[in-house]
Image 1 (cartoon, rainbow, N blue to C red):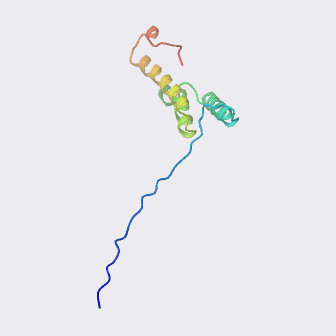
Image 2: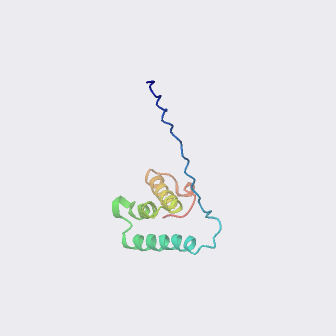
Length: 103
């Protein structure tokens, strides 16, 4: 009696296709509400934290934290800009070279 050959196991690669809606449409109300909620939360948190908290950097760290929690890159960028202005001012950069108002 002849032995039967085993068929080699074949693996099949599957590709997962993910469809992502464009954020540029703007017709979705959620795309307008999320940034507004983030701004309101940031404004409320900044009003509760005194300007001299955390060595004077407390009010500039709030937008970074809120942006991180709400996954908002624009808010993180605004917070980093405010923090950069405060750091530049603390190392002695002239106020005219900071490029903007004092936060």
